[in-house]
Image 1 (cartoon, one colour):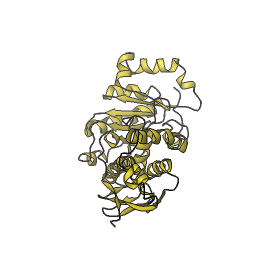
Image 2 (cartoon, helix red, strand yellow; image 1 turned 90 degrees about the vertical axis):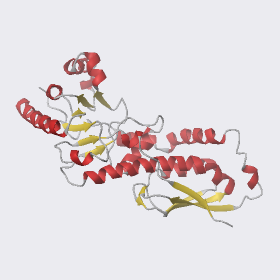
Image 3 (cartoon, helix red, strand yellow; image 1 turned 135 degrees about the vertical axis):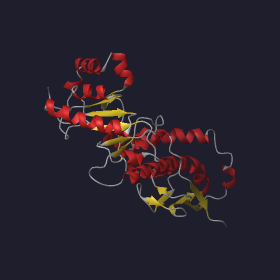
Image 4 (spheres, helix red, strand yellow; image 1 turned 30 degrees about the vertical axis):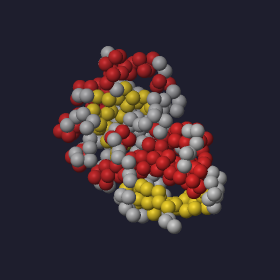
Length: 314
């Protein structure tokens, strides 16, 4: 039996590099353009109010709740797209904690342009800061320590905003799972059932040339029972995802998997747990012998963080 790839190989996805790629200026520009077009359409009907006020005005972004900042680069991109004279000065960096009442940034430029970008900029900033804040709550509840599992996101993201949302998870102290279908293979229940079983699915994957790819791409296998987990460990899995299992079942499964790995003479895959994990029950999973906890709610259910744009009253 061939040993699994070493930890130095790209077996756990390429999310960090892909996040950097899809948050770069080249990929930001069309999304920002579409977002502004959606809001501005044929023109801002209130712009005429400020036709005689081309001078620079100042606004500030103020936190209305405690949280973690994420998405500042999106605000910059919105205003960079709208007007070359607009300047944004940040008092905090993405990933830093913020408190209610703090001024996050000051924005200077023509007042009409500041107002035209307000809603799009805030929608991005509130969404990403909300994800970072929820992630930070999970990370804090897990606690620190080498034996502690890490919190991971999933592909349950908003279409076209995946890179931004995954970056927000990282800003909140979490880790990013595979970015998409092309940077790591993951056999979920539907793949396994359609193929006729785990072994059959992995055999078909091998026949397609998956294991011959260089650099070596990772394989995650989702399992629903101890028997499936024991089958998966003999199928070259790099990650075994224990789906919707109780803490007691997870402990038993982890112990038996370690014994099976020793008997096969292979490296123990990383263990990941998922399904129904919330801030209310995360504590009971934090001491389990697993390396990864994936939480879809980080991106599909995070509430927006309340942030406002305010202008100085005359």
